[in-house]
Image (tube, rainbow, N blue to C red; front, side, top):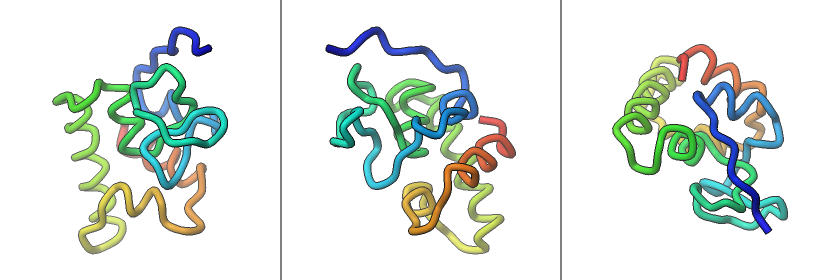
Length: 106
């Protein structure tokens, strides 16, 4: 049974705990099964799923956060890269994700 989901103010706060980050799905439950980002059973999120979890599903605030992330990734990668592709890249680490959201301030 799921409890009341904790509220997070920023992606930095959400991803401060390594166990809250995932790859390969927008959100997963504690067993690693994909779930909706707003599911009370969601235990971890990718960057995109996390933005929707923190700022509201399909909200203007989530889109603004994702726009900031995409802009920074384009600067770093030197080409157009999707946030999901960057998040899910083999070898990507939690530390890199946390550094990105901290640098961007989302």
